[in-house]
Image (cartoon, rainbow, N blue to C red; front, side, top):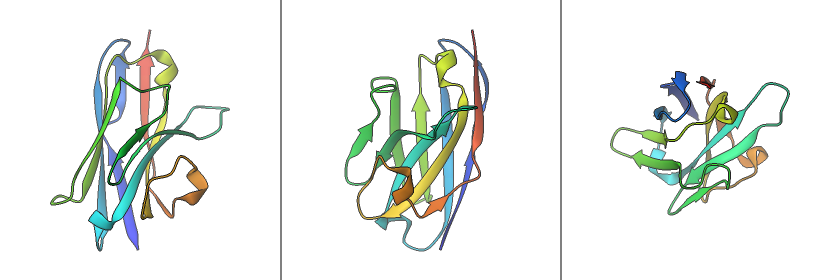
Length: 120
């Protein structure tokens, strides 16, 4: 079992930056691929990026997002810059064994989400 807790969300102006954290508890964090997803009101949950032995990013955030992990702290981070109002959403981290995936249904564990609001 893995428990995930996101933090770092908030209100930011367009063009600003934000770093989200996802702290994991449980065993063998380093063996899990971690994904970041987001969901805006009335929209489907969408892939933002993932990290395993490689990183993968959605086109919508490529060049603006960086995912990193600190296995010693059992934490994964999502750094986003040049934020746009379209980035407004609840951001979730998720974990699955083995490699990362763009498909949210393939993740086994989820955090509760953290709200990011980008004002214009």
